[in-house]
Length: 60
Image (cartoon, rainbow, N blue to C red; front, side, top):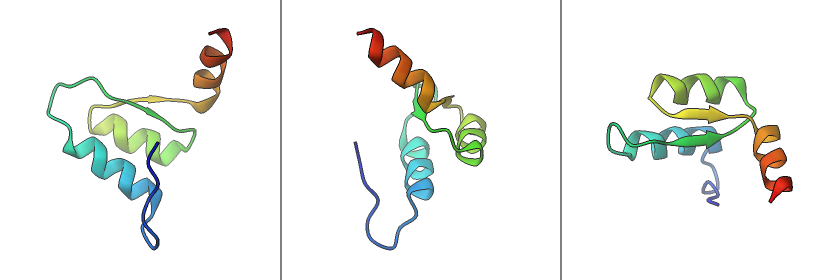
């Protein structure tokens, strides 16, 4: 878990982290924010809705 710095928008931090990964690396971003999901998808990451993560965690 990572928190954005004061004054920094968390969505921008998420995009920055995705851009920093090497091309071709499998990346999943958990967010139910449609704008974040679409932007990380365009960068090659796999957006995962938060509800899906919660369901998978509850099975463990």
